[in-house]
Image (cartoon, rainbow, N blue to C red; front, side):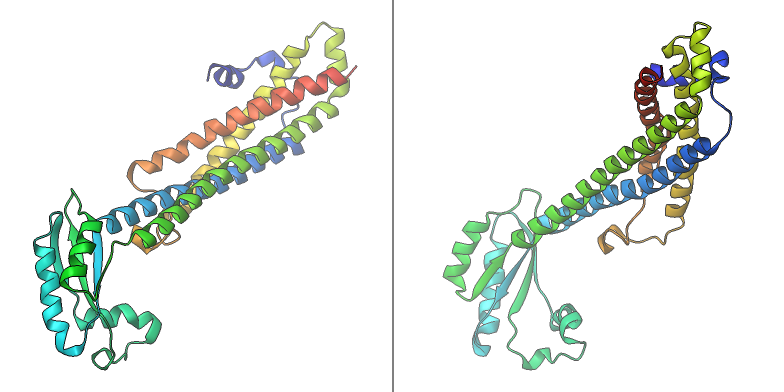
Length: 297
């Protein structure tokens, strides 16, 4: 960051080259503020997606379900046989039969609350909680096939993997959005710098006549636009963080949008946006200034 600190410190003599106000000043500050505001939400989305992926992975990694289908007269015996197999299987911490009330609650979103569970040939569900070491799913399937042929083990792999992949892609989309926001801000600041340089073409010609070098002239524009970007990004970041703080609180399991926001030390991450915006402005302005100054004869 030495270049950034030097650009912000600047040169009092060089500052007089750039007019202290004008549409480029307001455009640069507004662009930096708007882009920083959007970047805060993109960052919050990315972090929320990461938390959601971790939550799903943790919640589903140590659970499994046995689905048992059997004739009415054999359901109780086969349920007890399955529970006995599960009690003697290494890696299983607990196993319980899901009662009809819970099955009705699970099916209510699709079939309504008045589903007659007692009269439907629904399979018996047994919930498994694994230990930290985990169980051998293939070995358990072989044992269940011998003891209770109607039992099917679902270790949630086919459900967990797509969910985690979707959350991971959403997190990647958030970071990609931040990159695009930075690129858009760099382009807008470059256009503002180009306009300011073009508007001061006569002043630049006079400065050259009295011996000013292009590096000296460019420093004035770099400092002014870097400071404007820093000020605008700081304001946009503050507004974005305030907007997120005012959002209703929700558990991470409720979903990405419901859990959108920062948690704990995550609130420190957006504070990096203003210096990053200033660095982007520094590079964009410096490149633009040197290119335009070469074209001014």
